[in-house]
Length: 227
Image (tube, rainbow, N blue to C red; front, side, top):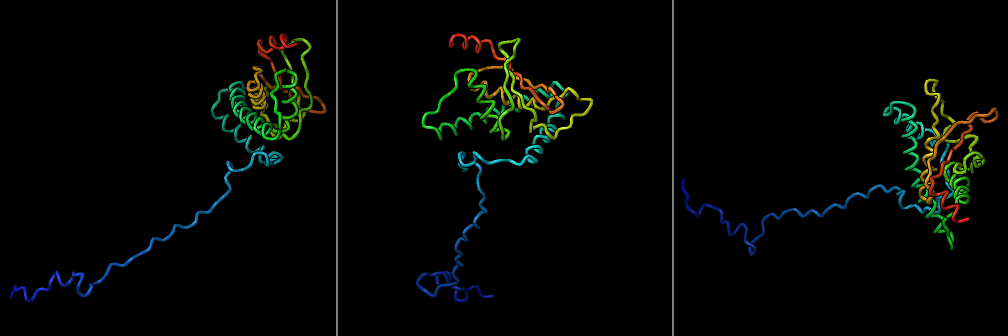
């Protein structure tokens, strides 16, 4: 077999840029990515435009029911369950106060912060209750026996309207989450207090609930100075 270079193809002639060009690589233009399906981002919504928006009570009740079921698996008794609900409510109340403050500052030319106790309690009774539950609370009362105790009364709490407490947990009051929300608002406004929920049923209102507010000593001392 001859190995002479006369019988081999010329590498130079095959790939030379001056001769007849060989097969050129196929040029592929990049395909633009498919347009992602866009959905509204909740963080882009105008907070003032959603002020009058309402959530269906069924959705509200379902969410709260799931919170109860989740918490029940992680507690040892009724007091522990109420404590955890109170903590959850405190987190909700903190965010609601922030939202209410933002809306007030953006819609009012001269927003003000309540520095007296009674106006702050009225804010919770009316504005906060309406923002959270769609209507004001039914009443606000001051304790006759103790000057540092106030009560906000809700005859038909929406948050527990569809809750059926088992007999073995008869002392449970699921409005502990509401008490936590009120405590967070009071703390945020500068009125530290301990807030608890108590069921005080009547013939007309079997679910009547009292949110008991026991104010910190420093609050009462400040009120005395500001009289």
